[in-house]
Length: 222
Figure 1: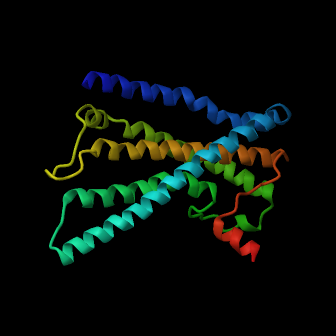
Figure 2: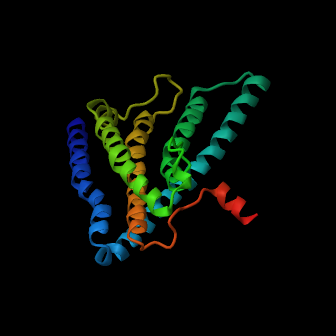
Figure 3: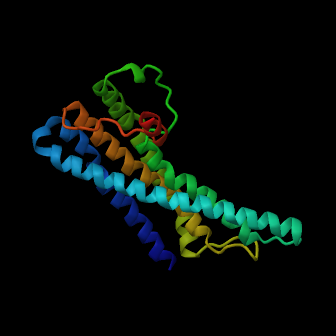
């Protein structure tokens, strides 16, 4: 079993390396806009759909976390009851809520920015800054997260189906650890979508240059 997961981990790493050429598609769209604009826009929408789906899972985890936390509080202060598995549920839900929603946050431009001049720029200037930032910062960091998280300790965790240290904890620590490389993958997926959007804007092939955050949409509607 250990050898199987070792080979699987190696295969996943090489699969990630094999997927790297996809990151060149936005640059190819810049070079060949007439040929690649339509497939690039199609792929962008499909990648956005993945982020929307994971956002739904994240929202479900948030509601579930609040419900379990309420259960723990009532059990502790009214019935003098506590359980490690309930605490694990809260921790796992909290981690999953943030890690799975990171891609959707990037989609809605909800991550913290330090570029104070960006808002006053044109759509094409913002797209150029975003495209440069994605290739210089986001993609390298995501690749580092994915590569380093699929480590020998991670593979051993799956090989042994690692559980909690406490006897009454949840026996799914190996699944919990999987959230880290999954976070890197989801952020890379949405980063590719953002890069495609920026490339399309720079070439004048996008009718929706920016995807506004929900709060901005509400303000615009009012």
